[in-house]
Length: 159
Image (cartoon, rainbow, N blue to C red; front, top):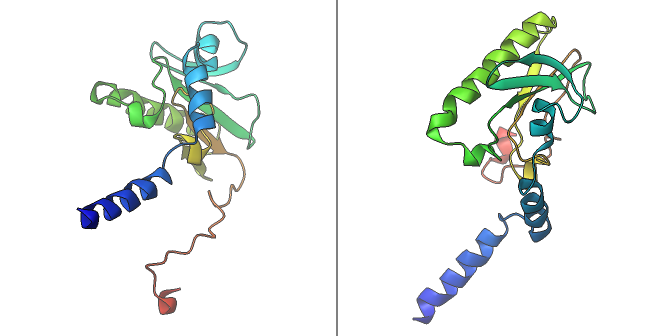
């Protein structure tokens, strides 16, 4: 019995390292209990510089742009994270990418390059729990992460 119990305790403790923090979970629950800022923009309750809107998708300039061309592309339907995406919602993801492609062409960054990014939960820095695709361009954006991670599986001679 002890042979089984000790590994199970170790296994359960190791998975706790991959859980979201309690503070993040509380903040997320609080934000999910009210309309998202994106829903408020859609409903005209918050101002935004809208660059695209149809019956399912809205795209607008965020409050704090990170590049000269920066749009948030958001489905009207509130889906908190990519992890919450249902199979029947998959068409929305495809449509978000189509809108990104078209906006990149319209704003003349299609040829020079751009980044598309969706953050999901704590480790990615997601702060608005309504999926949204960032379209970033108009300058060199550099690496997405510091690239300081060292893969322990990689051999020294491979580095």
